[in-house]
Length: 404
Image (tube, rainbow, N blue to C red; front, side, top):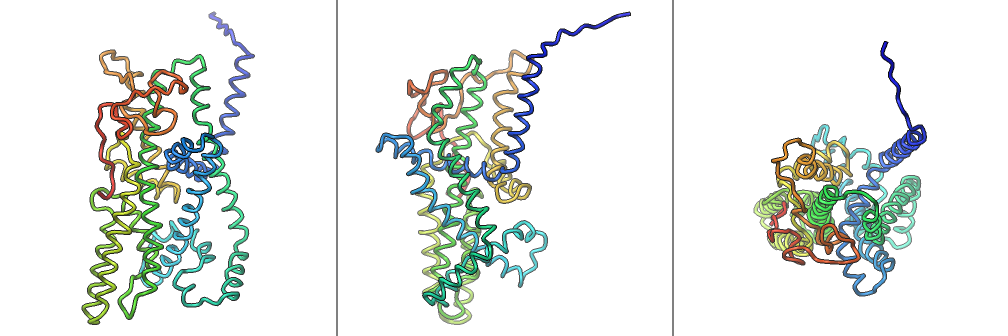
């Protein structure tokens, strides 16, 4: 009879089990607030380069992180929330005249909350001083629970982004001090960082800026519309233009060009309103299309992602996860793509498989931007070819998806 004896280190096993429990708790917390943490990551990447510019002026990491977030990012986020709420109201009005089917179910949970916001046109038509303030306060108090929860999530988002901006270098220094072989892990982490920077600080930031600008500009422009020639659901059109900017080549033109044609038909039928049509076309091209693209496009860097795969990640992520799927879907694509490219060759037994020794793509900001692979962040050695305009080792930069 064969007997088996196992030499179990119960002390180590207990610590491993305790670590597994802690890991499950962390995963549960992240799952409960996944949208909050994902948006916080977007805030970090979208303001990281601005934070470095501010830090170079003020010379203090805490002050620069606070200024970058609460002076620049917070007003932009609040404006985005307002524009989205108005667009949701217009989507609800549009759904009453057009059958949207299951598509309306994706935004139905947000429709009641959006009614707490005033449409700019209604404010313009019903402006009444104290009465307007009283009506706004009444609507807000009706949704005090929802507003309170939103403020809590917003606080967590900005707090996480703040500490990431302030302490990312410290985290990298701490990780480099561990007795771990970081060769493959470092390559994987740096390329993931570069791709997330490209997506969050480039494509998605461009879409959010375009959508917010479009919703506000079209709503204000519609205040001056005369007669039947007016923009249908202006805030919704602006928000859709921002979302369409994620589509390669044509981008937001698939939204505002048909609207321009619709306005042209209205003007031709009524024999008036051609001035408004011309102004709409000019504003759409210059203010909604060109200016946001020129402002945000310099923040886009190479990231080694396929344009079509990235576009489907935006779409499928939003359909699967909801509003935060626009951020989470591309994150999943980034982690999977670079795992297959960097880690899998290390796991294969075939020694002839070429393994990337160094990252192909480097981020243009953050701890990895000015650090040679394998060195501590304090050395600040620049290992990139083409810095600061590139971020790619071979000096090439892949054209990002979006409207060009």
